[in-house]
Amino acid sequence: MVEPALWLNYEEQKTWRRLLAVECRLRDRLDQDLRSAHGMTLNDYGVLVHLSEAVGGYLRMSELADRLLLSRSGLTRRIDGLVRDGLVIRRACPADGRGSFAELTKAGMDLLQEAAPTHVAGVRRYLIDALGGLGGLNEGLSRVETALEP
Amino acid sequence: MVEPALWLNYEEQKTWRRLLAVECRLRDRLDQDLRSAHGMTLNDYGVLVHLSEAVGGYLRMSELADRLLLSRSGLTRRIDGLVRDGLVIRRACPADGRGSFAELTKAGMDLLQEAAPTHVAGVRRYLIDALGGLGGLNEGLSRVETALEP
DNA sequence: TACGTCTGGTTGTGCTCACAACCAGACCGC
DNA sequence: GCGGTCTGGTTGTGAGCACAACCAGACGTA
Image (spheres, rainbow over the protein chains, first blue to last red):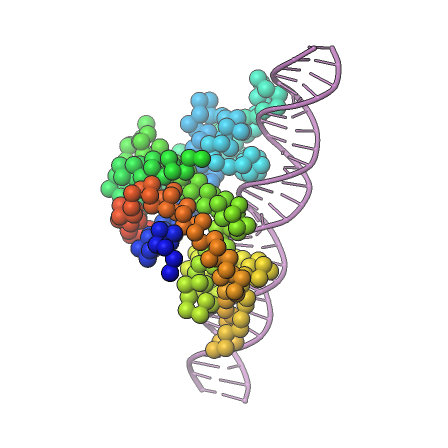
């Protein structure tokens, strides 16, 4: 045995693993729901949501990558896929010759409109309704965010 | 505007995204801590922990894959890496000629003993202490698990 | 024993991602 | 205006994963 403060007790271990497992299962479920109903990935859905919320329906690549917590090369490839599917187009940034925008197409907006209820229903059902509201979660997230500060 | 029940309000959206982001950051941080201090992945750490908790320090591949929420092919490759590093060995299952065990080596146990305090400290600092205990989290996880039941 | 089926594990393949290298354009000092 | 440096985005490469195909061994039935 080692001093207890350096280890997790049985309950703590169990909770920690459940957290990891639930995260994973929740994400998988939401992804599956979107795939089966709209042939679309949860990740791709995230791109469309962020673009739809931006004024004009477009964002700089780097800005979008930051919001999605994705590397820039990762975003380049993900946008490649969405462009191939006609959901997004690239547009040169007039103010900065290096930059480019990712912009939602009509087809992208339509698909988002169609898929959003599926996603939202999942979030409600699996998370919000299950927890009976998000007050407690919000509180906890703030504390964890603070602890994660560098 | 669409009927509110089908959409998330601003607060709900914000919380939902924070949840996704915090998950991601927490995992990344714990991974980074292990990498920098012990040259080891959070995923690999998970394998060692599960093996160390099994009686005899070994588990059937399929059993281990289930516990890690990993596909069997994924586990095969992950074990390949740990075998290459000398932390785990494969052993034939005497009772079933098809099966094989993954078994912790002395080096694997030593590395786990060395790395565990790092990981545990992270979980305590970023999660348990931040939340002031796990009671609330446990409660919430149970509810989400129930909602995720098929 | 012999044959069909099932199961555990590995291998082939393709996807997604990060890191590093790279290129073009912007920015700065002079 | 002109070099040096910085920055936004893409491309090269390798890691980690899932799905499907596969193989050897186990299991059931006759």
